[in-house]
Image (cartoon, rainbow, N blue to C red):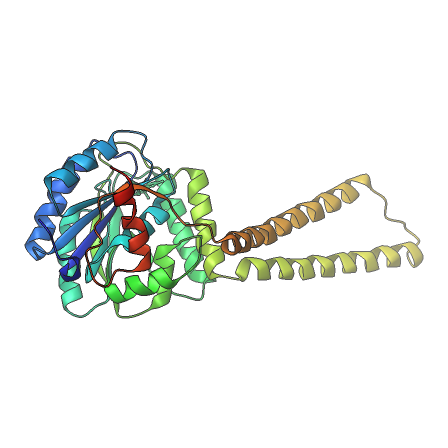
Length: 335
Ligand code: UDP
Ligand code: MG
């Protein structure tokens, strides 16, 4: 039962939020695929404060199978942070990140691994089509990826989620990136290395519903844009200049009209419209600046990204990273 963690060929990280119905199928399909790649593997399930019986299912699995690890976070920290916790605890030479709702087919891991063996350090799964997602999600996702590509200086591949395989090297660099607002797919693109893609059809959710509400999607999009682009801030400045210039022209015209044409411009309507317009622009600008400040604040506070409530991970390697040590220490205090 004692696996030597140093020799793990492949780690799979699965964030879990209210997925009790499918955990068993998920495990079976993962286990089947990954065990064909290597016998030295680990499946790391991160329970992100599920409100259903997901944790119980995970505890059962990790009792049956020594290659299954659970990390139970103390509350819901969000998808990106749950994945980060999994990355911190992983040992594999290659690490796969996959959604826990079976929208990402576990069988594709075999193909991802093939590309990895060809020498690629990042192999991301690119969606050919999105089954069962509504038109709204399809349109917003498309719009988001296109905007992101246009306004950020780095090339984040279109239509990819977090389903991907990354080399240990990349995992180590990721863990050195200190930002509190995680946007993993952007960070991985930023890191570079040899990247390639494998195409797949994204299935629809089997059970439950997406945890990404509109609000969360907007927050996620904001994280992506603000972490990788100064464009919103620059836009605010440009807008300020543009509006000032236009108002200056209008003032010139008003003066000209009053003194030369002897016609004073009157009008409550124009006054209200222009002051409301300026008011709106100012509020948006303050909002954009506020977003930046709030991000600075989070990074200055340096709170821990996540809190581990309990886990069964082991720290029996000689070269254990401090982050992993911190996670594993929870397996000794609890139980
Ligand atoms: N998830 C999570 N924490 C959350 C929300 C989601 O760990 O706060 C997990 C969820 O269980 C799933 C994955 O992240 O495995 C993707 O979530 P979801 O299916 O809701 O996102 P979508 O596929 O709609 O982008
Ligand atoms: Mg999903």
